[in-house]
Image: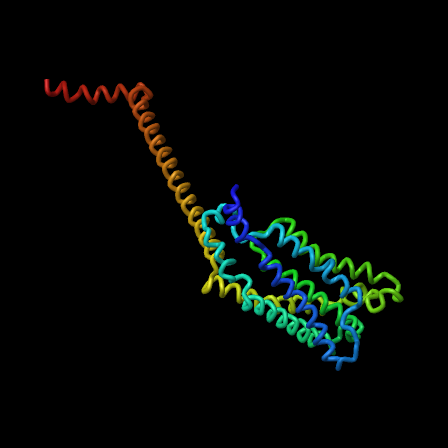
Length: 314
């Protein structure tokens, strides 16, 4: 393949346009939850998260989905890239790397951090968190907020992916599962090392329905702005690859309808042929019965009735 064709084939599907914006988003979301917590604590220096939570954030819990996006994601297939070279104009016109797009992702990160922090604190603090009526301490609040952050940034990545493979599913949902595994394993380390994470998930968070309901509600509320914006953009202000994806989906639906109609007409033809064949068989069987299969007594009576009028005429 020549170099111009190679450029047209891979430039529209270059996933770095989403990678850069996603790096801004996930770090702003995580960092601003720390800022809101410090502001709420009057900047006393009390950390919102355990030290190892913060160290593992960009290493284990949010890095693998970005790698999967960079390797496997593509807006449209290779055949459509060659068929629609206008896709390359999105990069030439600086649509995908514009400051408006970057600032939009940054604003989405700030908005996500606001929703995560304030919604989590209002749902957790002051409520009976455990079965014995004890309220949640700041360690439980930190685990709940961190869980919401991990779920949100990975699900945001899932919403940004156009072409899913099993590896992307493994990396996204595996990163979330790795966070829970880390909580359990790290929580069993003696408190001299695990500090605030010592059995906080096994004894406090996992048995509490408030923890799981809070996680579900916060994640849905945080994903709703981006989901609404994407739905509005695809419907009213679609980009070039959105138009091609929509045409492809409408074309596949049209092909399915045409295929069903063709199958239905073919089925009707087969049924018509079968009915004609059955009528022909019935006619042949009836004629055969009239000529050969009648009982002898009935044939004698029919012959006598036919001979009667002839004798009278004679």
